Amino acid sequence: MIEGVSHITFVVKNLDKTTKLYKELFNAEEVYDSGEKTHSISKERFFIIGGQWIAVMETEEIVNKTYHHVAFKISEEDIDYYQAKIIEFKLEMKEPRPRIKGEGYSIYFYDYDQNLFEFHTGTLSERLSSYTLVDSD
Image 1 (cartoon, rainbow, N blue to C red):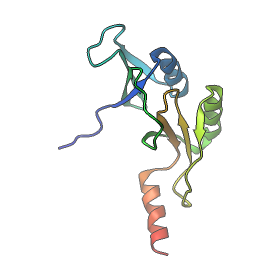
Image 2 (cartoon, helix red, strand yellow):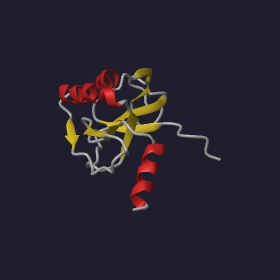
Image 3 (cartoon, one colour):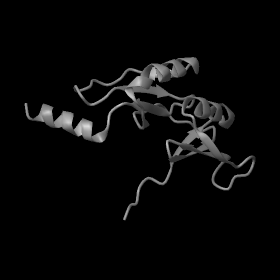
């Protein structure tokens, strides 16, 4: 039986640059740094972001941009703050997809290695409720 999400792994070209981004943008807590050791497939660091274990591994093998992403929940009051931080880090923002009224607001952006992230204000129950209203029309 699946108990929940264990961890999420991102592959990046520069651990130091990504560490700074994660700490300053996501308020991440760094809990492990392999240094030059490679217990897994490459040098790695572990972070806690919003209670979730995030693993980051360094490699030169970066793939193209996709819609695969991780969304972090934020409050509507924090939208301007996070948009300003994304601009401060000179990250590319992606245009949000069309939204149904009531499903929340999203900010999509790519990190330095084309990993897509989302800051989202809605919840699953709000989204399902919005979809139900549209589907009943």
